[in-house]
Image (cartoon, rainbow, N blue to C red; front, side):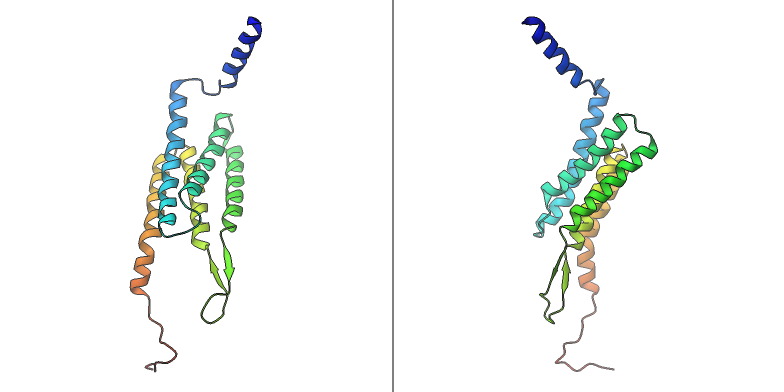
Length: 175
């Protein structure tokens, strides 16, 4: 019976042998945590304004994207193989983002409105940030996340301040 338990223990240790040293374990933890934090930043901005894809969605997309490329790199994938993994992530997340886009007939003029494009683009960019984190390009991931946060947070305020007011149909316009 003791041989059986030793074999089970040996098999369990062998199953976790993909992390050969503390440096590799630290690298994995740091990349996944960075992806989670950057995804949370973008998700928090979306959730703060009431969008459906919030903190958890963005964190999972960012971490998942990081995981896919990390697994490819850990198994010894070459650049062309890793690029195919990235292509799969891009396509898969594009499909996920497409689910956030809605076409509604709610405008005042009865014209169809498209909603969710910014959220879909944000999910797509969040995946790219996760890929950067998973590839070990931490500075690129952080800079991209900060720029994305600025775009999501600041650009709407700038646009609303500089938006040209359209004349009401009841008010005369100057020619």
